[in-house]
Length: 121
Image (cartoon, rainbow, N blue to C red; front, top):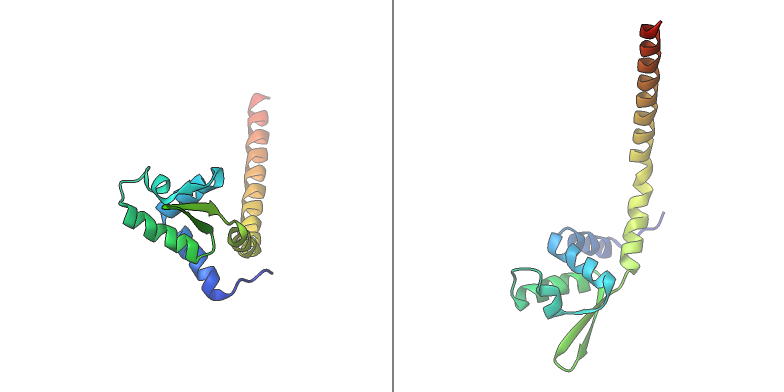
C-alpha cells in the first residue's frame, strides 16, 4: 500500500476538506490561474483567497510562480494520486458491501419476477 508521510497526508486531506479549495483545484485542473482569478467566483477577499492558496500549496497540491506582480498557480497532481492510492486501499471494504447488496437485489428481483410469472398462469 502507498503511504504518504502522515503530515503530508494530513495536509492533503485538510486542503481537500474545504469546498472553496476543491473548487479552486477544479479550476486549476483546466489551466493555470492567478490568485485573483481563483478568488473571482467566490465572495472572498484576495487575502482570504491567498490563505486558501497557501493551504493548497502547503499540501503540495499546487505550485505558485511569481511573474511580476501576478502570482500564477498551477495544479500539482502528485499528492492527489498518492491520496487516491491511500483511499483505494480501503475501497475493497465498500466494494465488498456493494457487491453483497447487488447480489441481494438480484435475488430479490428474480424472486419477484418468478412471483409475477406465477400470477400470470
